[in-house]
Amino acid sequence: MVEKSTPTHLYELKVGMTCGGCSAAIERILGKNNQISKIGCDVEAQQVLVEGTDGLDLCEMLKKWSESA
Image (cartoon, rainbow, N blue to C red):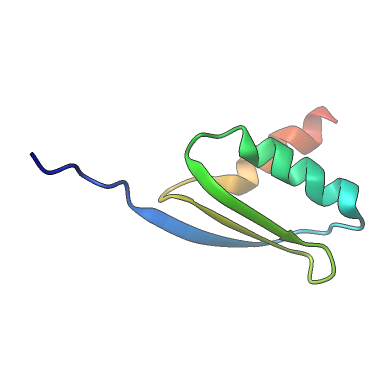
């Protein structure tokens, strides 16, 4: 039997991070989703790279978090 692999996608987000706390919060929030396999934050470049299944709405995930803060 052949297993189907889940298609992955590399997402690039531009996020207004100002410190390590910001990047840690983003990693914590996105890390809760089991469809995300890798998260990398670069505060200086204000960039977040995420590897996960195709079709994720990362902006919506972060928006819900920011509205509850």
